[in-house]
Image (cartoon, rainbow, N blue to C red; front, side, top):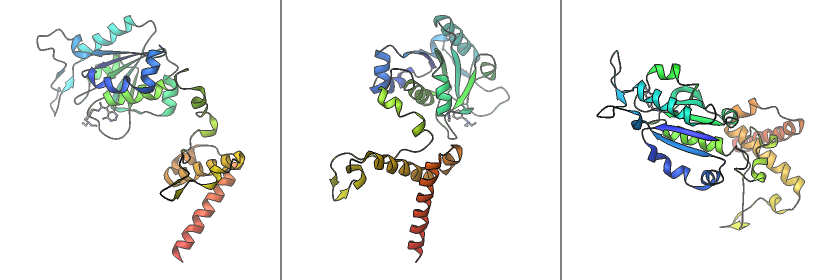
Length: 253
Ligand code: 9D3
Protein backbone atom coordinates (compact mmCIF):
# COMPACT_ATOMS: atom_id res chain seq x y z
CA UNK A 1 0.00 0.00 0.00
CA UNK A 2 1.16 3.48 -0.81
CA UNK A 3 0.41 6.19 1.76
CA UNK A 4 1.02 9.88 1.13
CA UNK A 5 0.72 12.38 3.95
CA UNK A 6 0.36 16.12 3.52
CA UNK A 7 1.43 17.94 6.67
CA UNK A 8 3.03 21.12 7.98
CA UNK A 9 5.06 19.02 10.43
CA UNK A 10 6.62 16.02 8.63
CA UNK A 11 9.18 15.46 11.41
CA UNK A 12 6.37 14.56 13.83
CA UNK A 13 6.06 11.27 11.94
CA UNK A 14 9.65 10.15 12.39
CA UNK A 15 9.38 8.22 15.66
CA UNK A 16 6.24 6.13 15.14
CA UNK A 17 6.98 5.12 11.54
CA UNK A 18 10.59 4.14 12.20
CA UNK A 19 10.02 1.55 14.91
CA UNK A 20 8.67 -1.92 15.40
CA UNK A 21 5.91 -3.31 13.17
CA UNK A 22 5.51 -0.28 10.88
CA UNK A 23 9.25 -0.13 10.33
CA UNK A 24 9.29 -3.79 9.35
CA UNK A 25 6.29 -3.38 7.04
CA UNK A 26 8.14 -0.58 5.24
CA UNK A 27 11.35 -2.60 4.99
CA UNK A 28 9.41 -5.53 3.54
CA UNK A 29 7.92 -3.20 0.92
CA UNK A 30 4.35 -3.88 2.05
CA UNK A 31 3.92 -0.26 3.10
CA UNK A 32 5.35 2.81 1.41
CA UNK A 33 5.00 6.08 3.32
CA UNK A 34 5.72 9.42 1.64
CA UNK A 35 5.68 12.62 3.66
CA UNK A 36 4.98 15.93 1.93
CA UNK A 37 5.58 19.28 3.56
CA UNK A 38 2.66 21.53 2.64
CA UNK A 39 4.97 24.53 2.63
CA UNK A 40 6.73 23.13 -0.45
CA UNK A 41 3.53 23.71 -2.38
CA UNK A 42 3.50 27.46 -1.75
CA UNK A 43 4.97 30.02 -4.14
CA UNK A 44 4.78 33.22 -2.12
CA UNK A 45 7.69 34.96 -0.44
CA UNK A 46 6.56 34.03 3.07
CA UNK A 47 5.34 30.56 2.03
CA UNK A 48 1.99 31.28 3.64
CA UNK A 49 -0.30 28.31 4.24
CA UNK A 50 -3.02 29.96 6.32
CA UNK A 51 -5.08 33.14 6.40
CA UNK A 52 -7.82 34.92 8.36
CA UNK A 53 -11.35 33.50 8.19
CA UNK A 54 -13.83 35.35 5.94
CA UNK A 55 -16.64 36.62 8.12
CA UNK A 56 -14.35 37.04 11.09
CA UNK A 57 -13.71 34.86 14.11
CA UNK A 58 -10.77 33.41 16.00
CA UNK A 59 -7.79 31.55 14.56
CA UNK A 60 -6.55 30.87 11.05
CA UNK A 61 -7.85 28.80 8.14
CA UNK A 62 -5.65 26.72 5.82
CA UNK A 63 -5.57 28.28 2.36
CA UNK A 64 -6.92 26.20 -0.54
CA UNK A 65 -4.17 26.69 -3.18
CA UNK A 66 -1.28 24.78 -1.53
CA UNK A 67 -3.57 21.91 -0.56
CA UNK A 68 -5.10 21.61 -4.05
CA UNK A 69 -1.67 21.70 -5.63
CA UNK A 70 -0.28 19.10 -3.25
CA UNK A 71 -3.18 16.69 -3.83
CA UNK A 72 -3.01 17.03 -7.64
CA UNK A 73 0.77 16.59 -7.75
CA UNK A 74 0.76 13.55 -5.49
CA UNK A 75 -2.08 11.95 -7.46
CA UNK A 76 0.00 12.12 -10.64
CA UNK A 77 2.94 10.46 -8.82
CA UNK A 78 0.94 7.49 -7.53
CA UNK A 79 0.40 4.46 -9.79
CA UNK A 80 -3.10 3.97 -8.39
CA UNK A 81 -5.97 6.31 -7.65
CA UNK A 82 -5.46 7.53 -4.10
CA UNK A 83 -8.38 7.69 -1.71
CA UNK A 84 -8.11 11.18 -0.20
CA UNK A 85 -8.82 11.44 3.51
CA UNK A 86 -9.07 14.66 5.51
CA UNK A 87 -8.40 14.28 9.22
CA UNK A 88 -10.65 16.68 11.09
CA UNK A 89 -12.91 16.90 14.16
CA UNK A 90 -15.89 17.14 11.75
CA UNK A 91 -15.22 13.68 10.30
CA UNK A 92 -16.92 10.34 10.85
CA UNK A 93 -15.36 8.64 13.91
CA UNK A 94 -12.64 6.14 12.96
CA UNK A 95 -13.20 2.48 13.86
CA UNK A 96 -11.90 -1.03 13.12
CA UNK A 97 -14.50 -1.51 10.37
CA UNK A 98 -13.34 1.64 8.58
CA UNK A 99 -9.74 0.44 8.87
CA UNK A 100 -10.70 -2.87 7.25
CA UNK A 101 -12.22 -0.95 4.35
CA UNK A 102 -9.16 1.32 3.97
CA UNK A 103 -6.79 -1.67 4.09
CA UNK A 104 -8.28 -2.82 0.75
CA UNK A 105 -7.12 0.35 -1.04
CA UNK A 106 -3.89 0.49 -3.02
CA UNK A 107 -3.15 4.12 -2.17
CA UNK A 108 -4.25 6.54 0.53
CA UNK A 109 -3.62 10.26 0.69
CA UNK A 110 -4.02 11.79 4.13
CA UNK A 111 -4.38 15.52 4.69
CA UNK A 112 -3.50 16.68 8.19
CA UNK A 113 -5.43 19.78 9.12
CA UNK A 114 -4.07 22.38 11.49
CA UNK A 115 -5.25 25.69 12.97
CA UNK A 116 -9.03 26.10 12.99
CA UNK A 117 -9.50 24.01 9.86
CA UNK A 118 -9.21 23.98 6.08
CA UNK A 119 -11.00 26.08 3.48
CA UNK A 120 -14.32 24.37 2.75
CA UNK A 121 -13.54 24.14 -0.99
CA UNK A 122 -10.76 21.63 -0.24
CA UNK A 123 -13.26 19.44 1.58
CA UNK A 124 -15.74 19.77 -1.29
CA UNK A 125 -13.51 19.25 -4.30
CA UNK A 126 -10.34 17.42 -3.17
CA UNK A 127 -11.43 15.17 -0.34
CA UNK A 128 -13.19 11.82 -0.66
CA UNK A 129 -13.82 11.31 3.01
CA UNK A 130 -13.44 13.17 6.30
CA UNK A 131 -12.33 11.16 9.32
CA UNK A 132 -12.12 12.03 13.03
CA UNK A 133 -10.47 10.02 15.79
CA UNK A 134 -13.22 10.70 18.31
CA UNK A 135 -14.88 13.33 20.42
CA UNK A 136 -11.91 15.19 21.86
CA UNK A 137 -9.78 18.04 20.54
CA UNK A 138 -6.28 17.44 19.16
CA UNK A 139 -3.83 20.17 18.14
CA UNK A 140 -3.85 18.92 14.55
CA UNK A 141 -4.44 15.96 12.25
CA UNK A 142 -0.93 14.48 12.52
CA UNK A 143 -1.52 12.20 15.48
CA UNK A 144 -4.81 11.09 13.92
CA UNK A 145 -2.97 10.19 10.69
CA UNK A 146 -0.43 8.14 12.67
CA UNK A 147 -3.17 6.23 14.47
CA UNK A 148 -5.04 5.48 11.24
CA UNK A 149 -1.91 4.29 9.43
CA UNK A 150 -0.92 2.15 12.42
CA UNK A 151 -4.33 0.44 12.50
CA UNK A 152 -4.54 -0.04 8.72
CA UNK A 153 -0.92 -1.24 8.36
CA UNK A 154 -1.31 -4.13 10.78
CA UNK A 155 -4.19 -5.42 8.65
CA UNK A 156 -2.13 -5.63 5.47
CA UNK A 157 -1.24 -9.20 4.48
CA UNK A 158 2.25 -10.16 5.69
CA UNK A 159 2.63 -7.39 8.28
CA UNK A 160 1.80 -9.52 11.32
CA UNK A 161 2.81 -13.13 11.86
CA UNK A 162 -0.03 -15.46 10.80
CA UNK A 163 -0.65 -16.63 14.36
CA UNK A 164 -1.35 -13.04 15.42
CA UNK A 165 -3.59 -12.28 12.48
CA UNK A 166 -5.62 -15.43 13.14
CA UNK A 167 -6.53 -13.86 16.47
CA UNK A 168 -8.43 -11.21 14.57
CA UNK A 169 -10.87 -13.88 13.45
CA UNK A 170 -14.46 -14.26 14.56
CA UNK A 171 -13.77 -15.91 17.91
CA UNK A 172 -12.26 -12.73 19.30
CA UNK A 173 -14.33 -10.26 17.37
CA UNK A 174 -16.10 -7.50 19.25
CA UNK A 175 -15.15 -8.46 22.82
CA UNK A 176 -12.46 -7.16 25.17
CA UNK A 177 -9.43 -9.43 25.66
CA UNK A 178 -9.07 -11.95 28.48
CA UNK A 179 -6.39 -11.37 31.19
CA UNK A 180 -2.89 -12.54 30.27
CA UNK A 181 -0.23 -13.92 32.61
CA UNK A 182 3.37 -14.98 32.19
CA UNK A 183 6.07 -16.36 34.49
CA UNK A 184 6.57 -16.39 37.44
CA UNK A 185 3.49 -18.36 38.51
CA UNK A 186 3.74 -16.72 41.91
CA UNK A 187 4.88 -13.10 42.15
CA UNK A 188 4.86 -11.30 45.54
CA UNK A 189 2.45 -14.06 46.59
CA UNK A 190 0.04 -13.06 43.80
CA UNK A 191 -0.86 -16.25 42.00
CA UNK A 192 -1.68 -16.94 38.37
CA UNK A 193 -5.19 -18.50 38.09
CA UNK A 194 -4.93 -22.26 38.63
CA UNK A 195 -6.78 -23.16 35.45
CA UNK A 196 -4.03 -21.64 33.24
CA UNK A 197 -1.47 -24.01 34.79
CA UNK A 198 -3.76 -27.05 34.50
CA UNK A 199 -2.87 -27.99 30.93
CA UNK A 200 -6.59 -28.62 30.27
CA UNK A 201 -7.01 -26.75 27.01
CA UNK A 202 -10.78 -27.06 26.91
CA UNK A 203 -11.11 -25.58 30.42
CA UNK A 204 -8.63 -22.79 29.54
CA UNK A 205 -10.60 -21.89 26.44
CA UNK A 206 -13.85 -21.71 28.41
CA UNK A 207 -12.24 -19.67 31.20
CA UNK A 208 -10.80 -17.18 28.72
CA UNK A 209 -14.07 -16.80 26.87
CA UNK A 210 -15.87 -16.22 30.17
CA UNK A 211 -13.31 -13.59 31.19
CA UNK A 212 -13.77 -11.82 27.85
CA UNK A 213 -17.52 -11.71 28.37
CA UNK A 214 -17.07 -10.57 31.98
CA UNK A 215 -14.67 -7.72 31.09
CA UNK A 216 -16.94 -6.60 28.27
CA UNK A 217 -20.05 -6.69 30.49
CA UNK A 218 -18.32 -4.65 33.19
CA UNK A 219 -16.52 -2.06 31.06
CA UNK A 220 -18.15 -2.00 27.61
CA UNK A 221 -21.75 -3.22 27.78
CA UNK A 222 -22.34 -1.26 24.54
CA UNK A 223 -20.13 -3.81 22.72
CA UNK A 224 -22.13 -6.75 24.05
CA UNK A 225 -25.30 -5.33 22.59
CA UNK A 226 -23.65 -5.02 19.17
CA UNK A 227 -22.50 -8.62 18.68
CA UNK A 228 -24.47 -11.81 18.18
CA UNK A 229 -23.68 -14.25 20.99
CA UNK A 230 -23.71 -18.02 20.51
CA UNK A 231 -25.79 -20.21 22.85
CA UNK A 232 -22.55 -21.23 24.60
CA UNK A 233 -21.67 -17.53 25.09
CA UNK A 234 -25.12 -16.79 26.48
CA UNK A 235 -24.69 -19.59 29.02
CA UNK A 236 -21.27 -18.25 30.07
CA UNK A 237 -22.67 -14.73 30.32
CA UNK A 238 -25.52 -15.96 32.56
CA UNK A 239 -22.91 -17.55 34.85
CA UNK A 240 -20.94 -14.28 34.95
CA UNK A 241 -24.08 -12.30 35.76
CA UNK A 242 -25.12 -14.76 38.49
CA UNK A 243 -21.69 -14.52 40.06
CA UNK A 244 -21.83 -10.71 39.97
CA UNK A 245 -25.31 -10.75 41.53
CA UNK A 246 -24.10 -13.14 44.26
CA UNK A 247 -21.09 -10.93 44.96
CA UNK A 248 -23.48 -7.98 45.30
CA UNK A 249 -25.69 -9.84 47.78
CA UNK A 250 -22.66 -10.82 49.87
CA UNK A 251 -21.45 -7.23 49.89
CA UNK A 252 -24.84 -5.96 51.09
CA UNK A 253 -25.37 -8.50 53.90
C1 9D3 B 1 -13.61 21.27 17.47
C2 9D3 B 1 -12.62 22.33 17.80
N1 9D3 B 1 -12.70 23.47 16.88
C3 9D3 B 1 -13.59 24.47 17.52
C4 9D3 B 1 -13.90 25.63 16.71
C5 9D3 B 1 -11.37 24.04 16.60
C6 9D3 B 1 -10.34 23.03 16.23
C7 9D3 B 1 -9.45 22.56 17.18
C8 9D3 B 1 -8.48 21.64 16.85
C9 9D3 B 1 -10.25 22.57 14.94
C10 9D3 B 1 -9.26 21.64 14.61
C11 9D3 B 1 -8.38 21.18 15.56
C12 9D3 B 1 -7.31 20.21 15.20
N2 9D3 B 1 -7.80 18.82 15.22
C13 9D3 B 1 -7.67 18.02 14.19
O1 9D3 B 1 -7.11 18.42 13.19
C14 9D3 B 1 -8.17 16.68 14.23
C15 9D3 B 1 -8.92 15.98 15.22
C16 9D3 B 1 -9.40 16.36 16.52
O2 9D3 B 1 -9.18 17.46 17.03
N3 9D3 B 1 -10.11 15.42 17.23
C17 9D3 B 1 -10.37 14.19 16.76
N4 9D3 B 1 -9.95 13.79 15.58
C18 9D3 B 1 -9.24 14.68 14.83
S1 9D3 B 1 -8.64 14.36 13.32
C19 9D3 B 1 -7.97 15.85 13.14
